[in-house]
Image 1: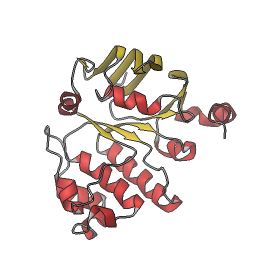
Image 2: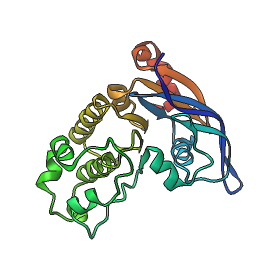
Image 3: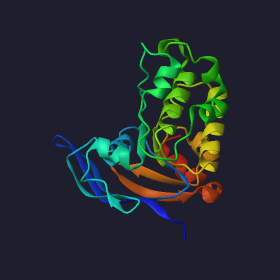
Length: 234
């Protein structure tokens, strides 16, 4: 059996009085790419934020590499080996590409070197001296992913990495994530683009109203396509 790197059990979470996650359960095995699929408002981003320690009103358990995460602050979660790439990307406009890349500290061994990152993202090497605001949306997304690969994180939480990007850039992002997986990283991916998700993921969890309503292996997508389209409204 593959090693379960992340285990979420009976997770409930609130924003103030708004009850967002309802007894959420999921597993992510080491070396997998797993997607959270669902319509807007289903709780996907909240799931990532709660795992990351950014949402404090919660019950249940989140275990990463055998350690209880819900007792930790967000910086302690990061130091344990989890990194979040948010939908808004968080690129610093006043810093160059290289300065953005080098800004996060290396938190543990195993991260990629700058040279390895530039090999994986050659466009970032070409644009190393450019300011963050001068990058295209796709280049900013690549920089946001590249930046966390230096830190030594082994589990990457990616929130809508293809949002607003052109098809050719989405294809490049897919190739990059496939290469990241080959290098041993584990990815939990929030994604609206079902076709992109199906090109890179091992398994898919479908969320609705704050809980998981189905789990579909990528190898079983063909026989479940119509059901999944109905879930997602596509």
